[in-house]
Amino acid sequence: MVYVVTVADSGVDENEQPQLSLGTAAARNLATTTKTPPQMQGITSRWLLRMLPWTQATGGTYRVNRRLTYTLGDGRVTFTNTGSDVRVIPQELRELPLLRGFDDESVLGALADRFVQQNFEPGDVIVEAGSAVDQVFLLAHGKVNKLGRGEYGDDAVLGVLADGDYFGEGALVSADQTWSHTIKAVTSGTLLALRHQSLQEMNAAEPLRAHLDQVRTAPGKAQNDHGEAEIDIHSGHTGEHPLAGTYVDYQLAPREYELSVAQTVLRVHSRVADLYNQPMNQTEQQLRLTIEALRERQEHDLINNPDFGLLHNADLSQRIHTRTGPPTPDDLDELLSTVWKEPSFFLAHPRAIAAFGRECSKRGLYPQNVDFQGHQIPAWRGVPLLPCNKIGISETRTSSIMLMRAGEQNQGVVGLHQTGIPDEYQPGLSVRFMGINESAVISYLVSTYYSAAVLVPDALGVLEHVEIGREG
View (cartoon, rainbow, N blue to C red):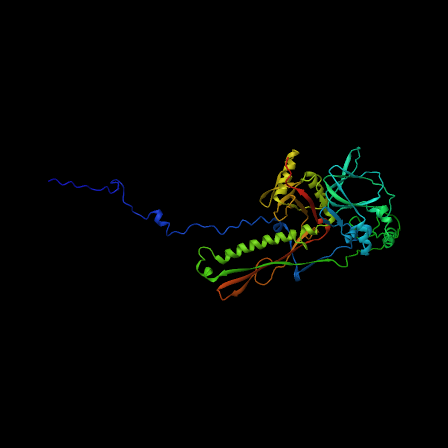
């Protein structure tokens, strides 16, 4: 009998060399992966925090002393609406120069009731040059151009008026004047109009007439082009000409800025801090990201806070409007004319910068970048155009572009903080140990103190109603 022995195939190549060391697949089980620190998408370049000169606010308060300025009622008028019906708030009529200081609210209410609502469309002529100034106009919504005759006979845009502006306030006194310019609508909108004749027919107008007569006949106080009390100086005289005495008058109640605060409580479980601190310290990484979030909130407040934010503290005379909607080179030139003394930088949302780039491309203009702190930054007229996503975009896809002069020595915009505070971790930022609770959670109080101040009005200009979504 013959026996057949079958040998199973072992799957091993007779020519393969035996493994002499640990394989990579097995070795990974014992190896530590290469890791990045925790990443955070909300971190931005924060150019405003980097560019503002920071001033020590000892005592937590910073006072801005200025020369005495006479307020001429150059504010904006506010409205209310019920559906499509628009009405001016009676007290807001005091923003008109001739009504500044008039406090009879019953008369103001009667005056507000006599304004008639008018709607207009693009291209409508609201007033014609040469016609009688017999109406006061309050612009509730929309944009209009002030047009005048240029040197060569063409129409020139003398200015742009938008929401809250007014014109024709001289009709409160008389209807004898004539319009020196034409007002033409750029967009559709709504305005309120009050005829001089309607004012004369008011039964309760006697206190108002007395006030207007007093304002019209009162001697004006000497002031310079900026509204400051005049310093009387003689020049160019010869001989023994008598010199006028003078002094520099100051504001009696200067603006004071108190430091604001942003705070949070960072909590880290002691088990995490004890057992999971290699290769990265968990508490340090938690603190790093918390501080980044606080700095982002700090920059947001410096721009948008209703008390000290730059968008809210820009002087009304320093706020201008785009001519056609998108930000054009002409608009940025106009903005430069408002902050013409040593402008430091523009600040705009990245989409507003992109919109400006599109307008330049349409005109065949290609502004060169500038080397700015090691970065290639877009610029206009040599002034850097820095991105900042804290400048908001409205539902109508409009935004604002700011231009500022920075520094205390330049009478510009300054950031305020206080250094040397207890448990200081960074300048103006403290991290305080608050203890460990019964759940073994460690708590740290993280605080930062800050504010911003505009030393003189012409240190900050804002281009408003910047369209960022118009195509073609």
